[in-house]
Amino acid sequence: MKKSLLFSLVMFSCATVNAEPISLEYQSFYQRLKQVNKGNYQLVEVAFSVSKANGCKLIDGTISTEKESFPLTFTKDQRIFLPYDAQLKSDRALINLNVDGDAKSCAIAMQVRSKNTKQAYDGAELLQIQTEMNTLLSMMQGFPMRYFASEIAGLNLEFDADVVITLDGKKIPVSGTYRLDKEVIERLNSIEFSQAPKVISPWTAK
Image (cartoon, rainbow, N blue to C red; front, top):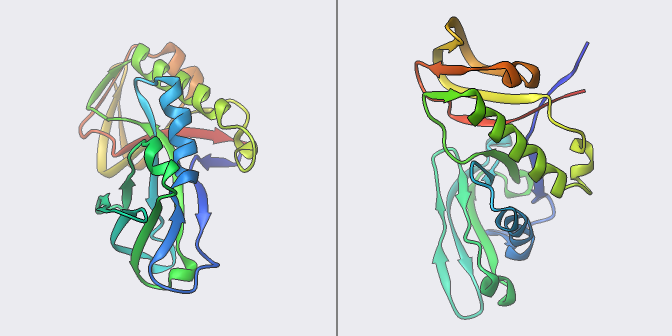
């Protein structure tokens, strides 16, 4: 039996941090953002978030240097938005996070995902998303990405609610998650959703 894996990676563990706020070097995030920027990807991106595991709730955050401090933008799902800025790297900026919960058990997750989602796609669009994800993941190979070095098995579609997917005219009720195998994507003409996916991310199978 295949073991299905959702492509999401814990990038930084904060287990060694003993005081508030959690502080992480911007440089580590910059290196990942640089890989995405160099690739000029049209449909995919890298997203960072504070994992909600262990009751870790993000209250607020800042990006700071020795001279300046800027508020950090984040969503209710605790995705954090970071600028791609070489000057912040040169200034040795820090990402400072205030959390409600045990800071020592908090972690930052990194996920490759589509930039935007919508209610309908043709086969060529999904194939491009899959191809760009494969290319980006290939660029990121090396620890800890070596565990996901092989090509993805398809796309993972996550929904906030029960939806109906229309796959080349065939209606499929879905609750939570639906996975599109790469062979299906290669033959696909069109796909529609009663509600746009919350996230489209790589799906790997081992």
